[in-house]
Image (cartoon, rainbow, N blue to C red; front, top):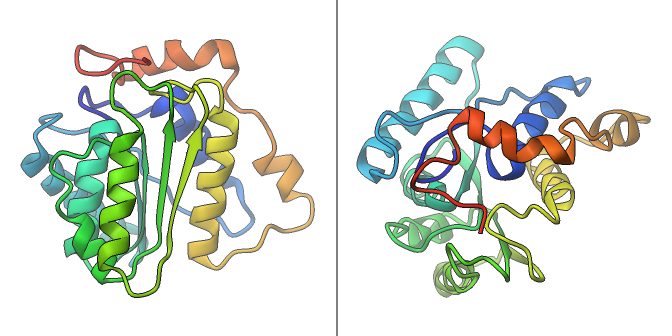
Length: 216
C-alpha cells in the first residue's frame, strides 16, 4: 500500500520491482499492488485491504499475507495486521504514527515487524517509526521487531531504495519459508528493474505523488 495520495508504485517505485521479482522466483510469490478508493481515510482503506486479501484467497488460494505500507500506508498495515489472522508479517516504510493503534495487536500476536525510515525525512520524522517500535516492544513476548534507519535519507528512501528493496524481499521470502535458489540472488533479486532516473516519474504516473505525498 502507498501513502496519502494512493498509487501503486510505492516509495522510489520499489513496489513495481518487488512485485516482478517475487513473481519471477522459481516458487513465485503472488504480489498485489493496490490503490485505495478514498486515500488517507483509514477506515475505507482498511476495507480495501481486506477486500484485496479476500480476492487473492478466492482466486489464488492465498491464505497467508505480508502487508507492506509506505507513509500513510502504515496505518492500514497495522490496523489489518492486528485484526486479521491471515496476516503473518507487517512492514512499513517511513510510516506515520497516527491511526496505528493496531500495532499493539500486531505485537500481541507476535507478528514479525520491519520498519524502514530515513533520518532526513521532512514529511514524517523517523521518530514515528521509533515510536512504533517502542510500542511494539512494550506488548510483544518474543521481540521480532526490527527498525532500519537510513542516515540522511528522505521520505521515499531515494538514496537507499535498492537496500530497502532487498530487505523487503528477504523479509517476505523468510515469511514464505523460501530460500534463494542458486543463481536467483544475482539473476532475479540482484537485478535493477527500475532505473534510478525513472523512479520519481513512475511514482508520479502511478499516483503516488499527489497533493498528499512528497519525496522530502
